[in-house]
Length: 412
Image 1 (cartoon, rainbow, N blue to C red):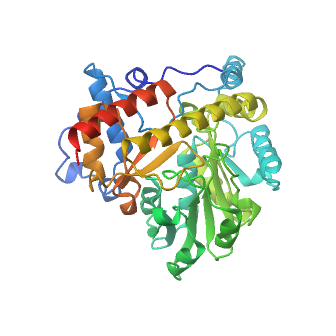
Image 2 (cartoon, helix red, strand yellow):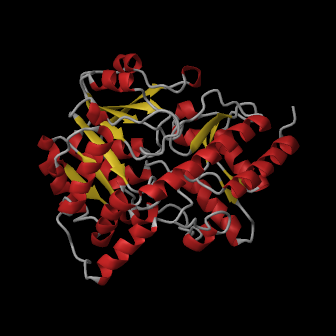
């Protein structure tokens, strides 16, 4: 396995500078649908795209904002995809995904979590985003409520609101270890509560839910949507699948994070049997099928990338420990050490209460990309998210720059 050169120079190689779309269109003929007009931007992408503009001007930027592994996909993955294309495996597949891949996913859940998953309960998708969209579309009528922790993954509300669902948030607090509690969830439940979203390990906090807490949440009544994309990237303790506690759940998972396959776009949803035909019809109409050759690569990842994953995980853990210690030395409070994913969510209120302005100020003056906490909901305001999905060399350089920035612009 090789480590990609996705430190300071890579984004300008793989991402184009943002085009100028001009002012918003006006007039009846160019009216933008309300669902698109009212959708919030994904702020971390705004930070990344501004960083790209700076890089196009020759500025060296250290990327600690994006949650993208800096490793190339394992060799067995790229070899399987290349072989599949060379053999003509370039056509539509079954809308649920090829059976060998669904069987491999089923085997993975049996071996990892000791749960039985019928391959006919799995829909293979082009990444986790379509899986989340399809789950919301098959579950929600207009006005149905989905309970979310706050802070949350930035895109969850847009998926829910796009299909006319309603978000009901439960603040999770640093003082409580960023823990999502069954009692707080229950206090927000109503007759319209259709589902409870959980994400463990969490983006942005990197924290995990305990088995006892997950079991209690599973018993509250509404269906569970469990985003398990960061499973496997756990450095202390163990991640539990919601399927260990209930079958009344939708599991969102994929290959982007654990197997460093972000650009190959491969994910899946595991769903209760009664929802499968609905999910299949949505997938047929909106997406047809996932990429054929990449599905073959997914089988290779599950069967042959164990050593690669172990090396990547060990490297992430080394970076995690370094970043925690260094951020504390710079003056940031980290009362809850993250034990999963590849993020550190730090309290930055001693610098500013406006995380958006602070993140862009750091980018412009220190040339370090970080994500403002407000991207993850109102309860994330005052925080910054740092990603350690970058080389230790780049992390060290980025934090050196950040330390100089704090000393020069935020003297106490």
